[in-house]
Amino acid sequence: MQAVGIQCSTALSALNQSLHLPLSHWLCGDENPLTLRSDFLSKPVWVGAYPHPLTVQIPQTMQHYASRNLQFALEALHPMMTPLQQITAGVAKHRLAIILGTSTSGIADNQQLLEQQWSAQQAIQLDYARQGMSALAQGLQQYLGWYGVAYSISTACSSSAKALAAGQRLLNSDLADVVLVGGVDTLCKLTLQGFNSLDSLSAQVCQPCGAQRDGINIGEAAALFVLTRDRAPVLLCGAGESMDAWHISAPHPQGQGAEQAMQAALTAAQLEPSQIDYVNLHGTATIQNDAMEAKAISRVFSHAVWVSSTKHKTGHCLGAAGAIEAYICQQILQDTQSWLPWHHQSELDMALAHLNYVQPQSQIQPVHYAMSNSFAFGGSNISLIFARGM
Image 1 (cartoon, helix red, strand yellow):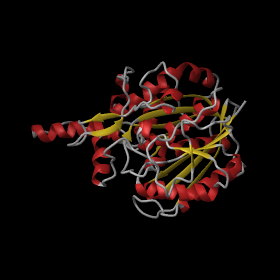
Image 2: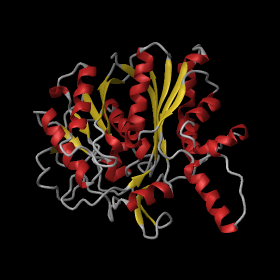
Image 3: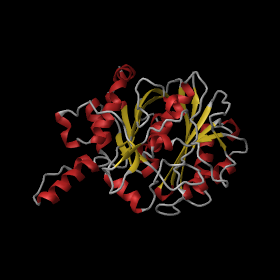
Image 4: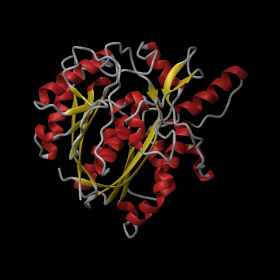
């Protein structure tokens, strides 16, 4: 695999509490960006909600795709329209591709209409196109007026990380010259009710690898990247994927699939484990995920690689989780100040405490290579490796 350059990027999440503060402020501080909401379940629940209104409107010609998910994507796309137009100037439109990850699509919007239908006992016109998994990529393609490859990936929590890997393959195969990749998922009752039925939601702000961890916080995010074959300040070096299919909702207890994905990413990037400076853990704060990931990390890395989970700051953004965490890795690598996201400050599980977690007092040296892990239901695993570029 040849590395590809991240020419520009954008991201929206719970971390956008203030649009004037750097990302490091929220990831290296004691502030809690999550909010306690009572409008999703019959009980209050902590979620990672984007705190600002969405101002970019969906054009009337795209109303069959209209959803908060698509509007969130357009909101994220808006600030990078100028650099995107500069990058794509002179490129044939059939060579401009879009690959995006999602798991909710427009389900929440149709769910509201269905609730109205049930309460009013009358038929309401539903447009199922908005909740199709392809709606996100096709909607953005129509908005941009591109004609190249455009599709969505929906493999739960690995979706948007897989979109980045697929974008790299598309460029390496010379099937596109510019690829817009990333992921978008918004909060909705379906996912919150589903995880609640699995007893997987935390009653508090989640504590990845913590002694008292009791589950996840759901979040929402939109993170978009423009990839080309040109050099850039941050490169996507390689990706490794595996499918262990151990259980429909539980990971392999020994982390075999996670280990395979990390090893495959190192091979694709032509790197040794000792060259990785930081690993952004999948780190969901569920009992099984954290235990298996710690085992896999210990087998892959013999040195004290820095690790942390950022989900206590963003929530678990499901289909957008891989993208928002890739964005965090990108910001770490392109920042002239050396910093890493703090792991949470609660007591660690002693069985997992041997890892080298980033803490407030940690002395961080410049990071040259960062890995980001995403492990999904059904054993769909992926690891991405990013590097400082030019």
